[in-house]
Image 1 (cartoon, rainbow, N blue to C red):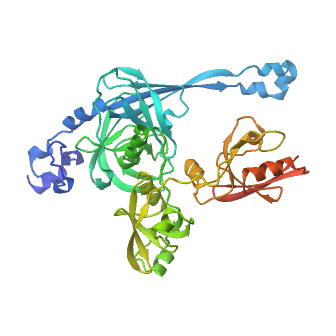
Image 2: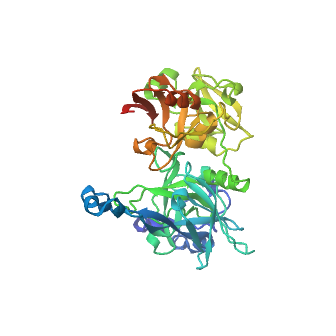
Image 3: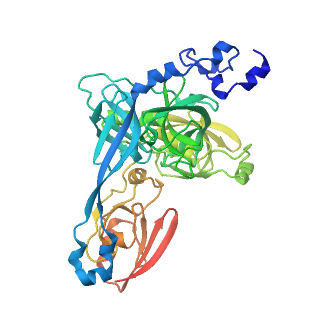
Length: 470
């Protein structure tokens, strides 16, 4: 085939079939060179994968109030009884999922099923099952569901090694966009290890230009061997439609959540016992690095795994088990894909030299004890559930594990805490000019008499102060 004809072929013509490839991807990434090769189809791969991708339908009941009933003029004529009881409305949504266990274990996005009263799973052959939730993990935006196939072994997708995925690899996205039915789109991997984007705390994604639209969330991103490389999670869009920038949660993170579901349903992620900061251009120059990369260690927890393993303040973490660490998100992701009880190797830059240390992987400790309390009475915190911060609590709510003090774990709707704008995750810094270091401190200050409430909280790294009348 001459060069001019090859250049005129559409991008799809350069696809490689999964079943035609041997086991090692690096041995086969070549451009087709014959008419027979460019006429190959994705159909065998799709036929293999489609039965393992499901549609998910959810419903939840929400209270709806007519805003006119809150109008003072309306109540003047009809009385407070006109407010009545809020009407209920059923909201429905849709998404996709992937069967990862023949016993009916399904992975999807947490935001697909969040708050749902009922979850229905529809298989590709039209059969429907009611699903039960095993794990809902907002931090990764993943959830594990379970259906009962009545003894039947369902078709599954095996998980690929997402670390072997490279920019330019061809991928297929399978899901249920806009509820039109199961749909397959094709594209390439546009970027790997994409950080600072997405809807989860662990911001580390595979980026693809395969068309992903609303309803695709929770669906499969597969390679040309029909293996799951990621779970489609979010898109960059101005109007809700696909612009060719979609993000998938890598299979390495998916695997860790599946394992947690199979081992009891509780997710416990390793604790490093260290804090860090980005390496800027100026810092890189001063540290002797060739470019800004890695995480500069700026604090260690006394007796923690990092300190015991030999990590030092001033070290730059460059890799985890040989995988490059570009920033804090990448480090957090790499730690989260490991199980407690093992160990990891950190590649460091220390005093202009490459160093390697091995650290044990331990669960974050609950020290101090959380001493959970529900605040009541006539005060701005009434209706809030508060706990003492510890590495374990910080890990649960996605805060810096080195933080100390008292944090709000829950705020009941319609309570004083809700009305003054307190939020889950707020750290209570001061109350009436007293530093709040424990839940007991908070309760004691609330009980003391004062003419006003002088409150300082920390939210998103910023301190916010206000004064409220008593």
